[in-house]
Image (cartoon, rainbow, N blue to C red; front, top):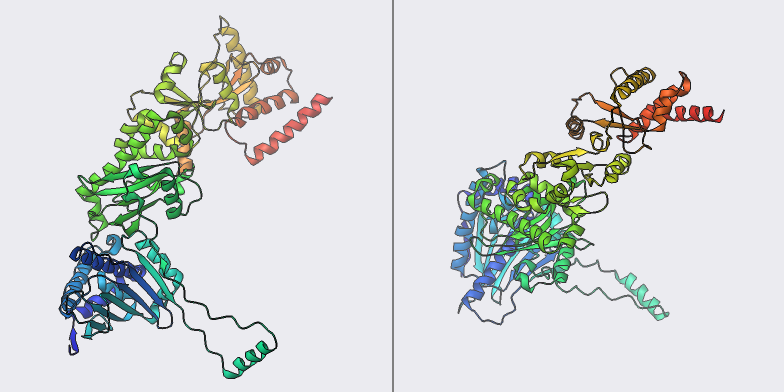
Length: 632
């Protein structure tokens, strides 16, 4: 064949510079596109010659000396006519189509930047050479060369075996793609689970040769008994990139727990086993396979970035495509493979695509099914996992109403005694004393005195100390969960552990009025609300209670960094049964009585929140004075 020269398209001079500019930060996709093309050639060869015993493979050779990356396959190869058609016409038309889609959605971006294909090579190469030989009888090898993706030369090539080499001479601005570690990382990310074996071969630049005098000196050393110089390093064998099988493609019945755990650790570089997993495997009404893992999720999960890897036919697309995978599932780790997913489209298109919505709903349902199944058939195991997964489950309930409807009966509440109860179980157990109210603590240590009062009456107190719980209790109250419950913190009121007055109302009112005057005067708080009640525990002199809804509003404002502040309205509940309170009523006017009042008030406050710096100083000073008075 005589050498042919030509232009690919009159539009080429406009297209390639634009593609280079727009995909500047995503240049590494050229490796994925080159390897994908090589795998496609092998698939075509397998289809044309089924039953062949050839050992198919794709080899990526990194030649530091020549400044080249070579993509080699033993696939179907191409004739001169096929090069003309697939490279000069079809492949370039694909680049045109890619550009058209990208221009239509500059802000949203194209998912994964699929479709550029062969012409992605020109994002990093200043020269591209194709050496190919078709497997058809009598085929002649072909060489195709282009330095800019616009002009090309085509002539007889030198390849002697069926297949294709695509050689990229890397441009000066993109020498980073000649770094072994970088190419390996890109190959593992995009091609780590491709069906065709992919290998990385590195050809190191030769060390500079020594001059004759230096060599003679070494020879003299050897004669004097020194050890001979070490031999030149042998070239490394090609490294198998995709040696880990795509476990998600196996039938779940054929997978072992060890396989699931090893796959998780390898893919996500984890040291701990996951808690459990969901294996997705469906062929109709869409083709979807994948594995979702439940790792331990901490209370500060809001700062976590999810690790859901999206694949299309075992080719990595991107991490965390929220248009495909429900947002709350981003707290999990896993892989999702959907070959039918439209990729060469914008994110906004995916967001509104009916197929994608069905896909997303299915994934959510399968996760919910797994949770409900665990709760129903392995309650003890489910309870053991609950402390680690409850932030995720609660977040999912608030983000997806259908998910909530599925799992609401399997939501657990852990009590201060370590028991795990569903909402229905809690209400049934405590309805005689509480009605449809749930008592909780968000700080069991600080609120221990109030917790003890409820526990003494046989009332369960649940622990809701995660950051999400403040929002979650309000969500459950207004979500129509079926129980019509309300939540109250242990210090929201004292009615549950107050004794009857037994005809002592007048005396109680008199004492309450006196104490009210004493406390307001000693503390300098005219807006203080004080009540005197008979509490069941005589050892507890005082409680500070705050209405539930106003406290929640204040805490919510702090979480979201809002400046708006509602006045914090507390009620100081004094225990008429307490000897300390009785001694205050009988105490003469003076410093000691005022010190006792201040100390009692601060002790009650400390069960609701830490004292401020100035308050701590005053508390310590007051404590020292009281000790001095007691010592006199």
